[in-house]
Structures are given as C-alpha cells and as structure tokens.
Image (cartoon, rainbow, N blue to C red; front, side, top):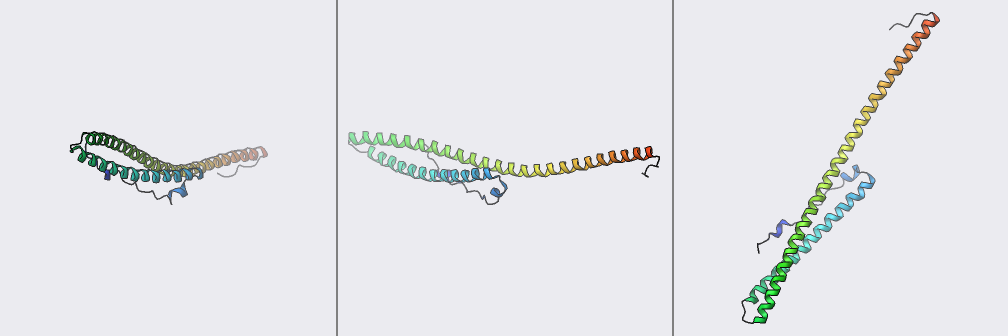
Length: 164
C-alpha cells in the first residue's frame, strides 16, 4: 500500500465573517453561520479520521509482526487483521478526500457569496445613478412641455413670447 501523507488533510482556516456578515442580507447571515459550523464540523471530522488512520496503521504494523510467527492460527488472524486495517485505511483516505472536496466547495461558496454581495452593492449604485438620470430627463421633458404651453398661451393672448 502506498504511504499516505496525512498532513495534506489538515484544518482549513476559519473565515473572518465580521465584515462579510454586515453586508449580507438577514436570511444569508444564517447561511454564513451555518457554513462556518459545517467547516468546523469538517475540521473535527478530519481530526478524528486522522486519529483513526493512525490507529489502523498501528494495527497493521502489529499484524505484520505477527505474520512472521510460526503459529498458523495467529498468522491467519494477523492476515485478517492486516486486510481489515488496510480496507479501513482505504475508506478513511477516501472519506478524507471527500471531506477535502466539501471544504473546497464551502470555500468556493463563501467566495461566491462575498462576490455576489459586492456585486449587489455595485448594482444598487448603478440603479441609483440610472434613476437620477431618468428624473433629470423627465424634468427636462416637463420643462420643455411647460415652455411650449406658456408660449402657445402667450401667443393666443396676443403677448410676445418670453425671450429664449
């Protein structure tokens, strides 16, 4: 069996949410807290799986030592222990890989949420500027309409139009 470097399956940093939560919507704040909880849970699971991996490694080493003995029953038992330990270690490695994938997905989701929150802020500013431009446009149109009405009213009354 190939040696596995367990240091690759370490703890992921806990994100600093003090600034990000302020910019999120109320309903999203719970999601951010839940993601932080899941990240902590995955870190705890990683720690537990590493400890179990070490236990099975010790069991496998003990079984290998027993296989060198002369007692056939002990050798068969050691072979069974060795196979069980190897199988368990394979399951642990696959589980750690899945935990790592989940941690990476949580990190991507967190980054996407932060980008979305920043994008929402920019969208709000853009909407405000469009609204102000629309108000200015409507005010100009209303002023042109009033000027045209006053000019017609002045011409009907026989007065000179106001100077332009």
